[in-house]
Image (tube, rainbow, N blue to C red; front, side):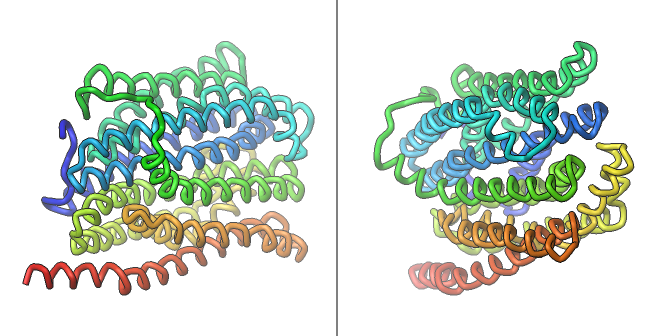
Length: 454
C-alpha cells in the first residue's frame, strides 16, 4: 500500500506521538481560525464579537456534521488497512468524500437561505443581527471545503500520515492570519472581512489536499475523489459516523439554546462570554481530541488485527499524557480566568463575565478530557453508539438544568455551572461503560488469542 503506515507493529508510544502531535497541531490550527477572527474582531467591540460568536455556534454545528465522514474515514479506512485490504481502503476513502460533498452542499444551501431566521433566534439587536446574517451567508458557501477537508484529514490520519493535514491546515491558518487584519481594518470590511478571510483560507486548504492525492499521488497511484455510491460501503460509513455526527450536532443545538439563554440573561455580553470562553476552552478540548483521534486510528488498525494488548497500552499512555495537561489548564482557568479572557476581549465588563465562565469551567477539564480520550477507543473499535448515548443524554440535561439554575437567581453563573457539572457526569459514565466493555469483550479477545497461540 503506497504511502500508508502500518500501526500494528512497532513502539506504541512513539507511534502515538508521531500520530498525535500533527493531529493536535492541526486541531489547534483549526481552533486558531476562530481565535484569530475573535482576536481581530474583538478590537471592533463586544457587539461585533457577539455577531461572529453567534455564527460560531453554527460553524461548530457544521464541523459536527462533517465528523460523519471524518470519523467514518478514520475508522473504515483504518480498519481496512489493519486487515491489509487496499481495495476496501481506497473505496471507503472515495465513498467518504462523495458523501461529504453531497451533505455539505445541502447544508450550505439551508444556512444561506434561512440565515435571517436562524440568527434572529438569539434576539440580538437589529444591527448585530444584520452583521451576523452577512457573516453566516459568506462562510456558509465555504462549508463544502470544510466538509471535504475534514474527510481528507480522516483519510490521511487512518493511513498514519497525520503530518500532511497539519502542514496543509498550517498554510490555511497563515493565509487567514494575513488576510484578517487586511480585510477587517485596511479594507474596512469589518466582520464581512473576517468571513472572506476564512473563505479564502478554507478554499486554499481544500486545493492543497487535492494536490496531494491527485498530483503527488501520496497514498494511491490512481485515486478517485468522487464515485458512485455503493450500498455496502455507504451503510458501513453511516453506521460508524452517524452517531458521532449526531451527538456533536445535537450538542451544538444545546449550545444554541444555552447561547439564547445567556443572551436573554446577560444581553450580548452573555452570548459573547459563552461563545468566546468556549473558543478558549478549545485549547484543552483540541489537545484531548488530538490524542483521541490518534488513539482512534491506532485502535482501528490494532483492533482489526486483534492486538488488544497494544490497544490497552496505548489507552493508558494517552490518558496519562492528557490528564497532566488537563490539570495544568484547570489551574490556569481557575486562577487566571480574567487575564486569559482579556487577551481576546479587553472590555472590563466582557472579561469579567468571560473570566467567571472559565473559572467555573476549570473544575470540569479533567473529566472532559477523560471522556474525549475514551471516545477514541470506542470509535477505533467501531462502537460509536455508546459515546453518542452518553453525550446526547447528558448534553440535553443542560437545558432543564440551566433553566432551573437561572430561576434560582444565579444568572450567567447558573449556565456555567450547568456546563461544568454535566461535563463531569459524562466523564464518569463513559469510564464506567468502557470498563464494562473491556471486561465483556476486550479481555475475552485477549484470552481467545492466547488460547489460539497455545
